Length: 87
Image (cartoon, rainbow, N blue to C red; front, side, top):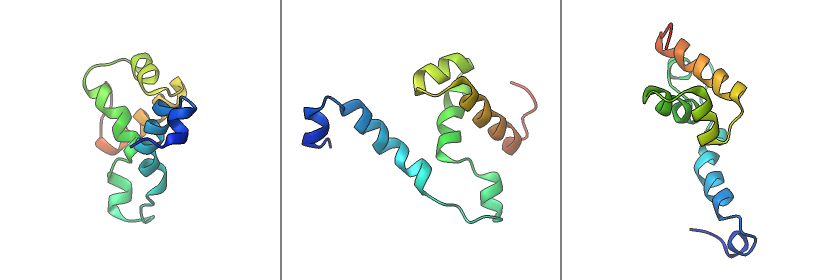
């Protein structure tokens, strides 16, 4: 659902993206728990899905509006958590 203000300002796409990404930045995982080490964060999962489908880092960063370094960082963490040594 879009607020009147976001529609009036033409920010519907930004409001929708914020709605999707807010859980990724605001759900703390207890530090030191096994889940914290092994579970992918919402952002890592969002970056991993297109990589799993064979998309390049450039395609991923363009599609998710992330910097290339951010995509590399998240994929590095995903590979480590999943024991993947190469794409």
